[in-house]
Image (cartoon, rainbow, N blue to C red):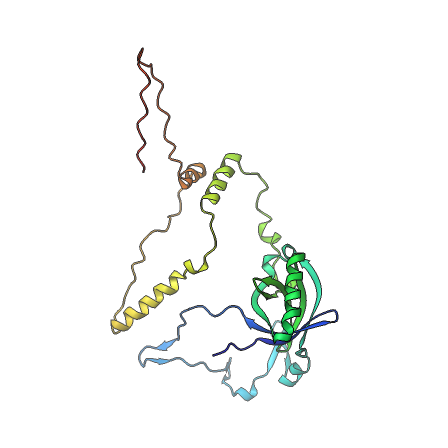
Length: 287
């Protein structure tokens, strides 16, 4: 089944318009979803709309409300909300170009693939992609989708272009409020050297297929075992590999062990036998 386009329209750069289609670049992971079950009957729990002191109410009596103060709401009906929705324009205007490093990682929310809508659009699409790549810039604009406006950024990605939905400024917490109590002391040079050595030792290409959600994998195995056991309780043995708290760690010693520094003591100096060459040191055994 062909993927459904998230948005169809045209990218506009000054007088140039490029018909494109936008598709989700991600998909839902293999998460395990649970339902609440009434154990005596084995049936799923249903939820009712209730009002405190009144009990269940009809759906026709429910409207949307925005709390303006404690316990006070402004009520809005669907027609009023629809009237202020942004028209889903079919044009993405590129209004600014910025360095990719200027957009903090906190602002990126979700990626999408942008593809040319037809063969005629491909030439202009490739020109935009290569111009962005050559200038090392990211294009910024606003996209109208489903009644709301999204801030987006376009950047080259291989032979294509990726659109990333960005968060607005009021959606991002200020990092300073969380990091303000961290001291400004510089780390000891020898500790920094050991940490850098450890980073170099573990540096390699990113291979996302080598990482799995181990909790989800364990839940799947548990569900399979539970189904075969016909309801019997099963406790997975996950082992006890987690470090225990309460111990003060010598950072220097821990870093040395991490980078493989055995810290072997130097042999004591001794007198050489007269007229005899110094004996060759014995080969070290590999740990």
